[in-house]
Image: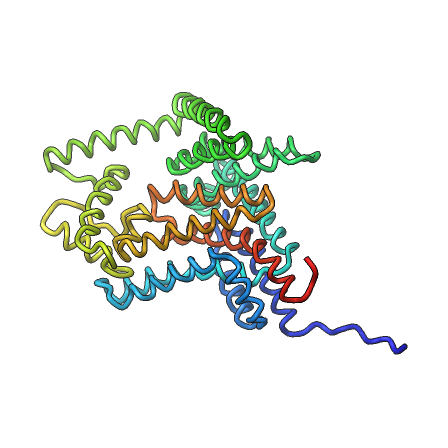
Length: 412
């Protein structure tokens, strides 16, 4: 019998490997202050466009409703450009930021090898460890002062992602194995950095929410009580014993008092009042939504519409309302909000098909963004939004794995 020569790697095969490598690089850079994330995004999209196997990809897209919801939301933002009241620059700027939604279906369709998907998730965790180490190094002045602003991401981005990373390591500690205590220590190390060093109040709120989520995931209804008590105790310690957290709480209280005074007297302004400005942005965004409730004012239109609304007053203009739900609804109306919420609900339901630890991790991603989006436009923001869509795509790629096997005729 004549022995067949070994099959040579095809162009499609090499391109799929390039997709995998780009996904690992992208995941690794999510917590880090580097432009490599943008490079990895371009690399991933180019490799995907050259990859072929479109029939298999379409089956994977159909197998994961989250991919379809993300596609629909992206298309709605595209449609929103056709009736937008914004300037050409504003429309293109916002559309460019929302284009990252494409990464959800691309990663779900492209990451067919479970090994590379796991490598990408581990690369994210490694990046989070490095980011935390850099934060401590800056705190102890182990890096030159001129590099303090560049070694760690902006505080909102850092706090949001580190809260999730601490949760993920804590969740890993519940799995059997010899590394459990290491994961506990890493989670505590990250959480202490977040609460003792970092100034992001969003990160504080997210980590407390994730404590409740983790307790619920492990102990269900009893866990809600356990998690709530643990979160309250930790918050009490942080806001009384940790100087930075205590200062941020005092600033929040002062901000609210100043905002109330401004609303009564209309004297002065809120330019230096971050929480007061948010409250003002939210109130005025609701007024804009009331004027255009169904379709909104179009993609990238918020700045112009907000400026018209507050013209002649001593109110600061807003580029975005620092709330993703309001930002999306102002631009796309209740249709856009329904698509945004539908994507989150679909992701939660799709995640129920994952192995337990990955199911829990996906729920952690959703809670992180859902809570953080109350105070920031996280999908619009470059880094936080990329974290959301990349982690959704990486985790949900496993849901489509069975479809891939069936399409290739491999017994499941």
